[in-house]
Image (tube, rainbow, N blue to C red; front, side, top):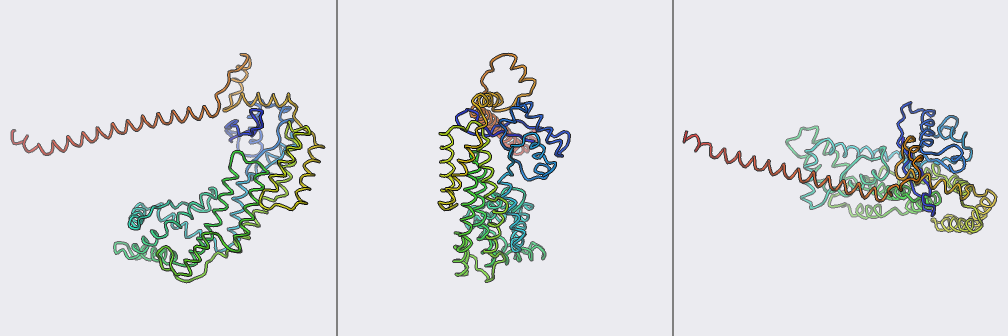
Length: 456
């Protein structure tokens, strides 16, 4: 189990993710074992119950039932100890779940996924097919992109790269399939398989489905990457989600860039030099886009995110004071009004009033002393935590030496990696030179062997 703490280490308002611990779940992976391991890791880091009750605001996990179970999950057990803690289901995981829900509802997506999976299997399990595809690409003077798996356990960015690779490699794939279907060295089964792949690739409906999927995954990939940024917060994430929904709503009517380009080529009957056979796509664009939009709203409802924003800001230590409350109010209102058409002036005013009301009534949780204690404890653990015995030993020794910063540690690791790489390259060059010398000597000896035997 990997634990990170998101906090303000410097005390200047710069929130960062700090690695806390890597805990082995030796007792099991049930809710009780995970909960006990989590509490043990926090205690080893020096976070007692009193400190956590004041400063622990929220916990973010994936959607596994052992973590988010309503009655006996890890979060439910934490809320028994810390009633004010807020739980957040990882937004990137929610995005993946929304995409998979949409794929199940739209039947045409299944046919597209099966065809792309066939391409992955064809080139992942045969070096010969890879070589022939590279030769076809060389004849067309084009560079290939790697075709990977689609809609697997990886992020949606991986699926977009695969669809983009199929779009880019389209001429080389068509050439390879045509040559392989006419290759007399292959048996009838293989030739028929490549002939079927070529027919499906030259289908105008497949080109339309490929363009539709490429446009969709491009927007979802951009959203996924923005949600993975280190400096993202709930307010910004909510705005990014709403912007993506607005873009998809517009694309549902007129299509994206790839769809518009594909429609022009289909009208001409020629796509990247390959003649197309007229047919309709299996993926209904309007239904597919609407399904993704509905599942995004279902999996990531705007009301839930706003509730988390207001609650976390209320409990976030050290935010009291009329000036800081006004700054928070202005920041939230500015982000909300700029976030992709989120509301009218009336909604903005209501949000502003809600933030002011909660901030003035809730009261700040963290005093200056508590904030200073949090900073000191986190600085001691940054960038990597120490064992509890080492912490006690260092505490008994008086003031602690400053730990190296994360930037310095990364720089040192990069230097060591480059040094090892240079050493390995030098060793490889020496082995190559020795091998070349040995081969040269053997060749010379083979040529001189008749002369040596004649003297004998």
